[in-house]
Length: 315
Image (cartoon, rainbow, N blue to C red):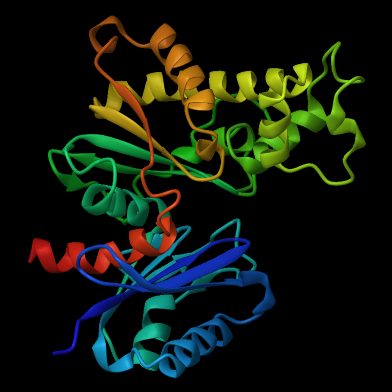
C-alpha cells in the first residue's frame, strides 16, 4: 500500500527548502537549494521535480503545498515580493501544477508556518494565536476561532509592514519605518550598523567582516554589552508591536518562529516583558509568548506540506 505524502516547498529570499511529509508530520526527505541560483522560477520548479522523481516519490505524491512571501492563496501567484529576486507577478502554483500534474496550494509563507504549528507544533491546543516569522523579513499567520485569516485578497498578516517609526528605515517594500526593518535578521544587522552606544567600540562585533543576526545573539549570550543592547532594542520593538496587535486579534498566544526565535527564552522573555508593559490592561497577563516547536523539526517543509493536509481536513 502506497503511503500518500505531500511535497512541502518553502521559497525564501535566500534559500528554498522542500521535502516530503506524511500525514503524521514525519519528514521522509528534505533538501535545501539557493533560491538566488535560479534566475527564472521555471528553473527552480524543474530542479525540484527532478529530485523528487529521482528519489522515487512521484507515485505517492498527493499534492504540493508552497509557501512564499506575498503568496496569494486565491490566485496562486507570488505578487511583488520585495525579498525575492523574481519581480512582478509569478504564477508559481500553475508552474508546479504543470510540471508535477498534482494539485498545488500556495500560501503566504507565514500562513503556511502557522498551519504547520497548528497541526504539528506548539499551537495544537490553540484556536486563537498569531505566529510571527522572524527571518529575512517579518510576517504573521493569524488564527481566530480556529480559522486562518487570509483577507479579501489573501494578503492578511503582512505585519512586518506595519510602520512603527515615522520616516524610519527604508524597507524593501519601498516605504519607510516598517517593523521588519527593525525586527528581523536583516533588521538586527542594520541596528548594529546604525545604533550608537558607549559599548560599540569595544564590541567583538567590530572585528567581524560580515555580521549576521546569529552572531549578534551569540555575542549577547556571551556578555558582549553592545550585542546585549541590540537584542534588547529588537525585543522592545517587537514587544511593543505585539502589544498593539493584541488590540486587533486578542490571541491566546504569540508563537515566535524563525532565526531570531531560535535563541529561545533569552529573547522571548524580553519580548514578553516589553509586551506586558505596553498592553491594554484588559489583555495583561492573558497572552503567552511561545517559541515554535518546529525549529528543529524541518519547520519550513512541515509548514508548507501541512497546507495541503489542512486543505483536505477543511473540505
